[in-house]
Image: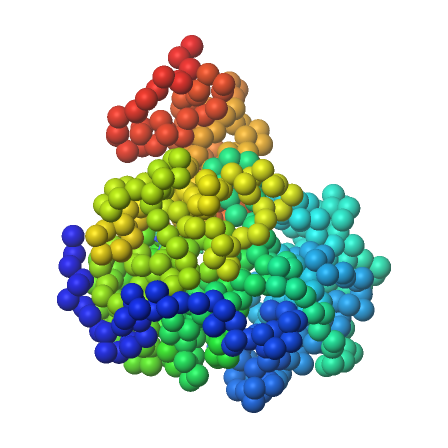
Length: 573
Ligand code: WT7
């Protein structure tokens, strides 16, 4: 194992030098005093992110810097206030939104996405962001399950929305030029031009809904994870002590708001801390990313292991062509962060990469490497003050140090999900006694560091994105040639895992490379590019339980040349 302990840069980050004292003395009631609602009792995330900063005198400060290739747009907090008020007015004038109604947003990153998202929150709506790569089925499942009344999208992406099959969808707000409006379609840009910059924010309670992120499990359709307004307290606090956000920072989180990192840490945490927030559009390339770090003088950078591994693969010469001297704090999330990558970060950027662990369901950081803490390469770090973590067995009993088990969190941390949309039984199934059981296995060492070991279930993490095998299998069997399909994550040096599908064909079809390509495109165009199997293997038969369930565990054992384990449930007819 690579030793990274020698890389201690504690003086650079005085933040959590005395972790134990910070953990012991932590009191969320103290943090609450930082918010306007501590005085008023009135909640609204968008207000805390934007308007409250204007009131505190930050109106002329840069709030959003958007970069897409050579185009850079900048907005101050005051301009954000005006734009989000206008967006709220456009939505209000065109749809009769009530508190708690779902407004979904399906579009590529652009300033307008942020205006629409925060404008929706100002109306008291629950926002549902959808990743731009989703195709028809993925979009339909989510809009249908959530009962979304309004969708904000672009003309290009609207072609993937089966509007006629979504009876709850009353209005579609289209962001583009030359939008032909009718009784269902609203022209956003025209509306913005005409809209007032004054808007009366709809005040909420702390338990009211905020955001609905769909996430994949190992079985069933994607689940809508609902977060409450109160999540802001943990997003704000972790922004301060983990992201280490300070007044003059220029912060860039590379995640798309279609995923939870792109909202909790791409919108809420930086703006709750009144910090300049960078959004970069377009596709990943080492040049465009390093270019953004240099041009915008980014100081705090939050990304993912897959991205760091791709940058590492691009070579050190590329790095040296850019001035990255402003970057003072680097963080990672989404998958295990290899010690090799941490070491490379030290050698090449002269910065530690700080791993953070959390999930869609947790809403905010839970286990992290704090600035100032000793790093142990490969460890996720220690619990955020105010979050109680443990390793438990399947009955919810705490296990001793150095024993592998379920990574669990004591119910009640502020950003905890409040609901699985329309599925209370699923929500309850996450908890054993008072423990939220994460689905990850891990152990805790004698000094309180947590070490990630793997997923307990079949969920696939590819390039930092979580995909459920069931959703892909369901799509695959819609293909005319496919009889049955089983999908697993296959270990991959760059992406963590890739999607691999084992397939049996209907009698009249023969295996071929053309067919593989056709199947790949079928999933790519029907579900999402990141869900398309990068590898396909045709089989005569798939391993199944007696009840007919495909045993992914056995597929994985085949793939990795491991013993197949307990096959007593295997159907051997
Ligand atoms: C799963 C959650 C909210 C973060 C983005 C992904 C894996 C997350 C780490 C880490 C090892 C990690 C876990 C977790 N994961 N962070 N630092 N080290 N694994 O959110 O899509 O809800 O996925 O991502 O397996 O359960 P998500």
